[in-house]
Image 1 (cartoon, rainbow, N blue to C red):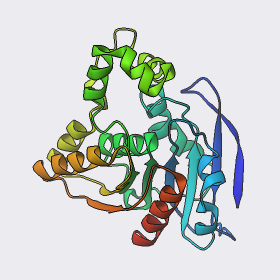
Image 2 (image 1 turned 45 degrees about the horizontal axis):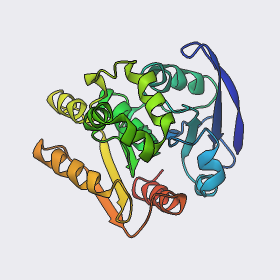
Image 3 (image 1 turned 120 degrees about the vertical axis):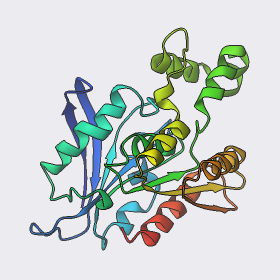
Length: 253
């Protein structure tokens, strides 16, 4: 079953898009796993539905997939609160969703991959599994510094809109916020002795590939367990679709 529409969010103070993909023949007496699937920078709540085979993969599974719309927020600030706090309550009021941590998954591609890592490592007691495909902004602090040093070059390379996005997140002065550092979140989660299973993938022809190798090394240095797969692919939905299919198979979603 596929449902698309809007819900009113008290956190966002507006209607926001949402798509829900469920297995066929939902059983009222059964509690299902839940996977929050986060879109990339130029996407919305329908992107995974329109450009991947997720609705087919979900047919015979045990998981309800929740696809929210987070605009170009990088899943920060009020969108972080919406995804991690309000959205789960909305969905549990509608569907029979398990409350167990091990049945709660968050995953995404590109900006959504960063968002999945940010949410899962900020609230490891809430998410049992995290999937991040070709995540951007793994080193957001460095990117912000580079942008401040040469904003003209950044605008030429990525467009003026990205500068506007960062301004909405960090303010006009583009001051770094430590709560967005996913490596620091990972260190804190490790100290609490609670970490999600982390599944990372990236295509070898992806612009973020070198960042992923660096990120994996950093995780190893702080003894954070994770799985990483790479194959010949680019930053597109041919790759994202293969990645989510692998994850569904690997974790029996």
